[in-house]
Image (cartoon, rainbow, N blue to C red; front, side):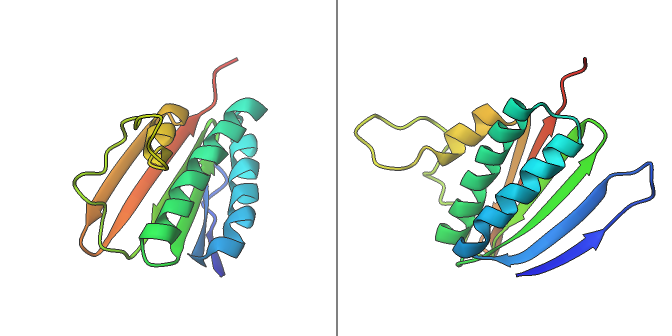
Length: 140
């Protein structure tokens, strides 16, 4: 795993990218995301929900997108954003963020992500997928 930081000026958000995340590195990504979410002002429940969503996307990227993922965490006052990039063949057209039937094994990750994040974008092509997830602190 390779980590690069691109800290912005004091008033701007700070970003760090972890490149080449594989299964053994997922726990470190979760810790980084939770810390960034808390630093951004999300309450503990919201930070944990966001971390669960990011975990789902990272695991999907590793399992279905070529064996590793690049994860960028950007946090600023009141907001945290995570971008997960893989280098697989893209998400098949028949995969959707709908809740599958109870008899179906798996397939709940994107559905769960849509419910746990404020904003989710998915850009997929034959050269990989980029998923961007955002969460915002609730004003006091």
